Length: 206
Image 1: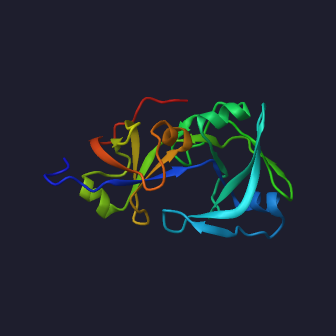
Image 2: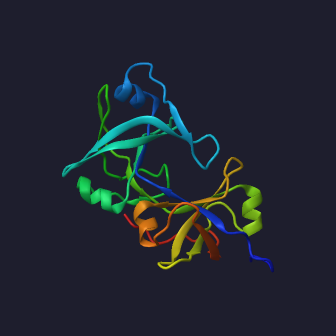
């Protein structure tokens, strides 16, 4: 499937806990008319880390200074690791971004107010972004599932990696902090695609 020449390594980004917000929730948390302020660009074009931060409040605890990512979204969403779920006292499913049905909610606290989300807390399904040209190079398409190997002293193989293909995407694999820590990954980490299975999703983990 991959041809005779091996495809290039896949850059890996470590995605720390973060929040995506709707326009209404931006105003509820930071004040009427407030607009998100870009702090730094992210790996995907048009995406950015914001100056704004919120607190997450769950049944058993809270986590302060959680970064908001922009731009605004149609639905607010909280992405956390399994370790952080336990700190908050919730059980969030592993989901692709935007797949929020049946997920638990959380309370968000900002400098101007609070929002009680009825749902929206997830563990992000590990995934790799690709442009159509990059997907063609790897012999893949949107919503394929692949395995990616990382090296080093704690190297391992990540199974069930979702492929996301879009003209606005750039090659980058996203892991949460628990996943990255398990493999002792840091800045500049890369992975090697070792197999792919077209459009075969893993068993649900809800």
